[in-house]
Length: 338
Image 1 (tube, rainbow, N blue to C red):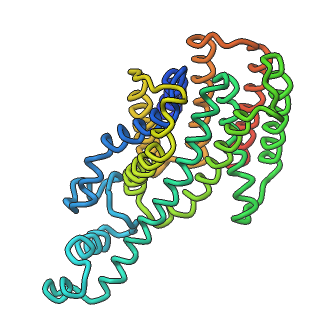
Image 2 (image 1 turned 60 degrees about the horizontal axis):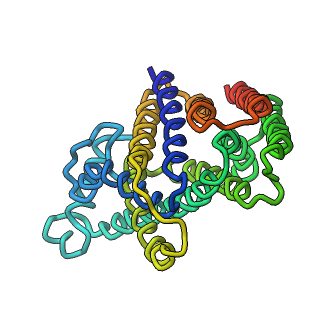
Image 3 (image 1 turned 90 degrees about the vertical axis):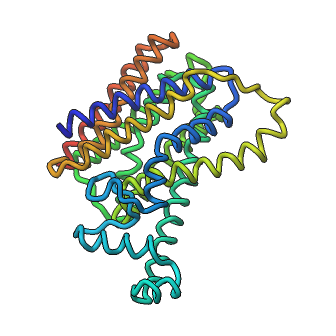
């Protein structure tokens, strides 16, 4: 069941990329991204309300919005009750709760600060990725994004001291080769990887996405997935509102105008459903994170097919070879993590 959900998540991610491409065509980038964060926040609003009010609607499930992860349900429940009912020494005295509540409140504040940093990283990746996707074919952007697990693997080696085996090194080299071949084949579409700024935007988005993956490995050791997912959507909305207000709104008459498209809410729907399937898959005790993460990257097959069928993109023979090399590299990485 968990593997089937991983493939469902991958398919939804492919449609997510396709919706972004359709929404960004001849459209202003920043308002589209702002609406994405607004719709995503609305979708996760029940979890936000539960987290703020401490109603415990999802307690005891993988959808639990308590900030901290605990191995024991009793400890989690007690800590959640304490943090909900007391945030000051006065409240502690009147409720009979020990005065170390301040430490718990500080821990909750730290959890939110960690999520804010994640929101900044992911939003920076999305801004770069949205601009790149608007100006580049989906059949180029998708394969570049698919190399993200390779960057995560290299980052884990550099920052977490993990060692790569022969299979993983083979996967890394195949991914590098595919990017090199893609840089040569893209010249037929007048896209120079060295000088095209949109390629650099996609590269920055992929790198920041890998940083987000490594950061997730750090924060998810202590924070619950639904707490992170719901609050980081909210913080992204707040940040994007400021970005649009300060950057896009004053110059909106001198740039590409914003046009409403019904594909815009589909961006949020697909990414939220994809993440829901992803977390549901990981909640299975038999699931393997390495396999699930790798299967999610197969979303490039869906986005590549949509680029061909919907957007009529060209130079397909060379791109298919590049895509095959990337997928082969992902397979070697998977073999190396078993």
